[in-house]
Amino acid sequence: MKTGKPIIGLAGGIGSGKSTIASILSDLGAGVISSDKLNHEELNTPEVVDCLRRWWGERVITPNGRADRDAIRGIVTDDQQARRQLEKLVHPRIIRRQNDLIANYLVDPNISAIVLDVPLLYEVGLVDKCDCVIYVEADAEVRLARVSRDRDWTAEDLKRLEKSQLSLATKRKNADYIVVNNSDITSLRREVEDVFSRILSGS
Image 1 (cartoon, rainbow, N blue to C red):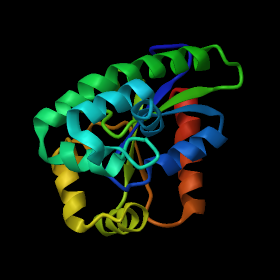
Image 2 (cartoon, rainbow, N blue to C red):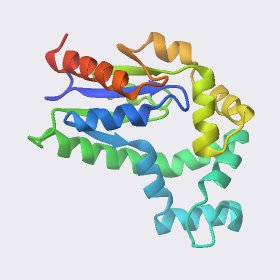
Image 3 (cartoon, helix red, strand yellow):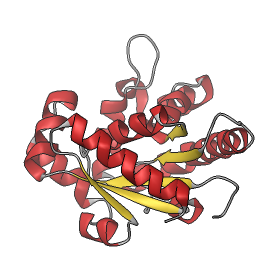
């Protein structure tokens, strides 16, 4: 264990339900650090909004002056240079926030473990901070149904985003635990409880 409490990384395909597993782990006493939440907060800081406006104009700013995540995603998905530009701006800010939260959770007696809910856990090297990784598995049709419902994505949208990431097979192979999230929340909760218990016991 790298710290006094286990740091657990979550990995899986888009729409696999990592945030659902993170929520269950939070209920069980883990401190969850959501990269999406931090990214959303950092994108909407005045200095980042100003920078995005200078780069890409009003098309990436909503009428109420916030960052338009869908418009930004449309730009960086097809433009590697734009993606690197955005990452260089936002990632250091997110890492600082993550480190602060980890430090706070380590000294919080009510927190038994720390969960990194990070979509690109392997791609950005955060897996190196983790004591173990839980891979969240879900069938392709289930994942597509979720992103279609929640994000209004098409099958092509999902395929394009996943092609820009490490393969699911590689993520699965490198994980320490696997949970299946296809439908039944009751079964999923029992599965997560079992894995969390094993992690805390060091088995």
